[in-house]
Each structure stands twice: as C-alpha cells, then as structure tokens.
Length: 71
Figure (cartoon, rainbow, N blue to C red):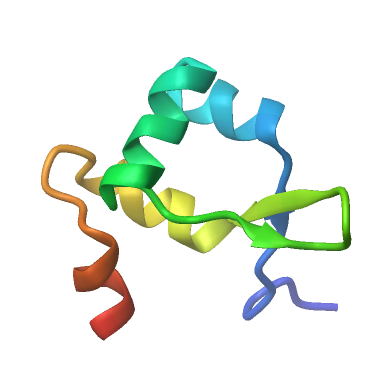
C-alpha cells in the first residue's frame, strides 16, 4: 500500500513542534496570510494539511497563501 498522494491532517501540537513557532506567532502568521489556514474537521476540531505546512517550511520568509493557492 503506497502512501503517495495522501495528505495527512496535522493537529496544532504537531504543527507547533514541526515549525518551532509559538501558538500566538502561528495564529498571527495565519491572519497575515503568511502561514496556511487550518481546515475545519468538525464543529470543534481543526487541522492543517501536511503538504501545506511542508510547503511553508521550504521557504517560511517568503511564503504567501495567495502564491501557494494559485499554483
């Protein structure tokens, strides 16, 4: 069974650990459009697509949600 083409959903603690950002900085970057927005999983849970977090990690200084969504 191949894992190619799958995109895991990451919870907040995993995203904070991977990026080394604080919670406040993460949400500030989301609001500024310089970090991927989370997706709603149900009424009380959200998560981030692993592929979008990895894209941000490739170039965090120049990442823009608009640039990533356009491609």
